Image (cartoon, rainbow, N blue to C red; front, side, top):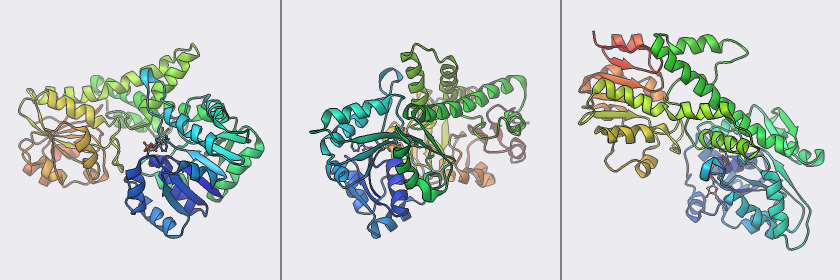
Amino acid sequence: MNICVVGTGYVGLVTGAVFADLGNEVTCVDNQSDKIAALRAGHMPLYEPGLEEMVVRTVADGRLDFTEDLVGGVRRSDIVFITVGTPPGDGGQTDLSAVEAVARTIGQAMERYLVVVNKSTVPVGTGDFVREVIERHQARPIPFDVVSNPEFLREGSAIEDTLRPDRIVIGAPSQQVAMTLLELYAPLERPMIITDVPSAEMIKYASNAFLATKISFANAIANLCELAGADVTQVMKGMGLDARIGPAFLAAGLGYGGSCFPKDTDSLIHTASTFGSDFVLLRAVVEINRGRAAHFVEAIRKALSPLDGKIIAVLGVAFKPNTDDMREAKSIEVVSELLRLGATVRAYDPVALDNAREVFPASVTYCASAHEAAAGADAIALVTEWNEFKFLNLDRVRQVMRRPVIFDGRNVWEPERMRRLGFEYHSIGRKPILPA
Ligand code: NAD
């Protein structure tokens, strides 16, 4: 099939590369000329395991190309995927201006029947909105259909998730239109569910809101464990073994960040309010999440008080491991609060430091390794649970630190091991290991 993917970010670039790898002819469109120029020169604008190899391979095979020309892309294609950003607007509502701009050009450009697929995360009702915008901008009436095909990939494993999704959701206005998408996805041999368009749009938000709820639930229990002297990792393990609950997304820590959960939970609360419904549960989930970074920094302040003049090594700045994405990363709140309290911050992350330089204040020092960050530090604050931190040579780390104190925001290490290694160790929802 001839496919146009509009918006060459995490979702669009991965989707385009995978469709091309499955044998389709794919044009990836973006309105950022530097991004398109970089991609044409073989440079990836983002870090994602396995992506570069797939892009290089499919470009060399002539099945994937990059352009700023949306009109040309639309005219060459049978299906157009909209994968542009849908950032938060004022008051939690979703900013649909990029989706609208693309729909407008699709309307102006189309010359024959087209299936337009919303893959961006958009509030329920956006399918109708896109349909209206396209119709309004057509020079003459040309039939088309709008499908909702929400994306569930996770940054850091986006290629794997796109090749082997748990499910593929196709919200289509008719069985016949759904068949076009079924055919496209058939080679993946994954479970597919066909719904109407609003239900597909809602599935995406409901899924993200539920996962966010699991995270905030674990964190609320962690707070209670800290007060009651219980261990949240044991509690969550005990809960997660119940098949009705499951272990995923029950890790207590600094809470969720990234470009999806924060904006999607806000958006669903806003959608509910437009229908006159107060989503009390989800508001509490968001509130609990908002308190996580402050709770963590408060523990650091209490233990090291005063923070003025203290050196803190911040390990991990990406919003989660295996990505360089810093959108809504918890490190942003943690670092700015540490700096506000007078601490000096030395930061290390395996891949996200370039992005960090654009986000953090100028006073942050960037280090080439965890050991370099820890050198001379009064404490380590682990913010992102990269695998390499789990396997750090902590003996060596302790030797280079000014004081052997660790604040583990993701419960990466075992308290008893930290005691044996001679650290003062503070983690989430577990008793601290204090100096004897
Ligand atoms: P992104 O910011 O990485 O990429 C969006 C791209 O769209 C950018 O390259 C931008 O230049 C381009 N763009 C914006 N307006 C455009 C226009 N008018 N014409 C052409 N290109 C335009 O965003 P993303 O993370 O890929 O997310 C895209 C959508 O997918 C969002 O709705 C998001 O909520 C959803 N989503 C994201 C993830 C994720 O993990 N990142 C997962 C599932 C769903």
